[in-house]
Length: 159
Image (cartoon, rainbow, N blue to C red):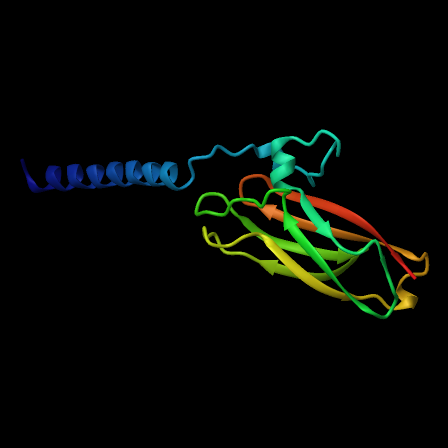
């Protein structure tokens, strides 16, 4: 075998083995197949009385008082799912955002690790002039790397 043939064979073998290793690594780290339709729009619970397993584990759950006083701080907790979403190297929550109406209130970013739980707390103060209708909608959103962008809402009365 001459040197040129040897180098060609070695290069082809190297490229082939690296492609095979990349595919094997992708299957090991990302074994769950992704439903691309979940990335087309904002996902929400369709029927609160009959939630699907995907909705139960991905829709943000907002916990806040039903009524708050204007100008006084109150705590809002946001959890991803009724049963907290699992976190691991192949399936994780990237972030949780909270908005008061259309105004962003806060954002928490997460890392793809198994020891984190996608739940966070925000302290909110609503000035009276910001709530002319005496009611405000809290909007929580989260993004899952495999199941897209999810949103949940909660109405709060402001006195």
